[in-house]
Image: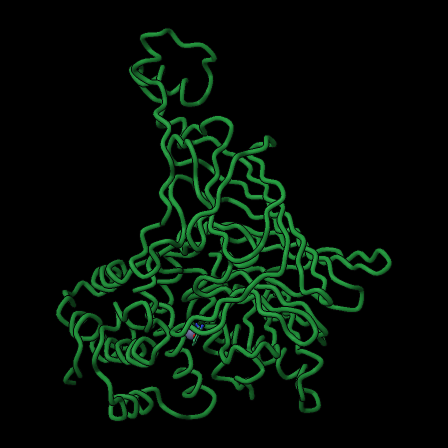
Length: 473
Ligand code: TRP
Ligand code: ZN
């Protein structure tokens, strides 16, 4: 449809036919006027906190990750195939790929392509011929070695983390490139297939829905598919010895949960974890609108990262974060709407994830533990010592700080007080519904609330989101 629209009218027919590749030979005159000027795609996607993350010039549609893991050597042997569309006439383009992995073969549209690696994470690819804007292309990268996790002083452990009995990959914000070549930016969402081969006896869990599992002697291959758009920071893999519980949430939604076998569990915990997940998904759907993915669940793993992560459709809870009690589940499952289905374009806007996820905890406390949200707010407001920093621009090293989580949730409760319950709960449903599977910004959120309430709330939002200092009530 879009192509047809662009090609309407006489004047544009020639250039349109050219850009669609319909004319094999053009006249020299037309050629001079319309010849593509191929240029390199940008090496970064423009995030001020992570300027090298992501790339320009193309848009990924699908990742097909085929990876074998050998726990004895801790090495992987993988081929990742990426289906993308050029958004400019491309002479070359970058993927993000970091660490010590070695590339053995790289092709674009089936032809070997030249590549170099530059800086910490740029994989610079020059295909044999330029890629026309609008054309789709396939990049296939074969590689192997021992992936190296990221240990960032401010952001903790992420990427490919080996464990006692396998490995867990947690990719927020910049871990994905430790084990697959990727356009590692929040605003290039894509679907995924992960086909993972491990020694028979180990289990593999990942985002989305399981495919067939096939065993050939000592090797077993698992397949997982995420068929809704997913940001790379929300992709996940868990390999190891797991007790898996398969259930269903409301509406027949597959609900797959797993707990690492090495973890000390209470009797029946696997079932409780599965059922609580289902219960919270149902409750949150009643507030936030239809659940955005085709399955749900969660994984309790002994990863040693000390956080839980809202990996798409199936959060991962580090064993150290358990009890894994209801409000943590409410937080990570709340992220499925706020963070996963809706994802900020820039990391400075992460309060749009964490503020709402923390608010989900507050709502959980009210619903299931009789602690009114206003009481939680009042306590947070009274106890907060540090009002420096801006909620909607915390700085690169502070994206996981209380500033974002607590003050983000406080801003939402203050908004609720300001616009009333009726309007506020409409925002909680309509904001994720209107932006389902998309990318969002704080500016958009403010505009959305102002339109919905027909009020100018600029100074309110300025005080709570953009200004350091304790707001007066
Ligand atoms: N975003 C995660 C959550 O709130 C938490 C998280 C991810 C985190 N990476 C981190 C917390 C690093 C501290 C440090 O659910
Ligand atoms: Zn969170």
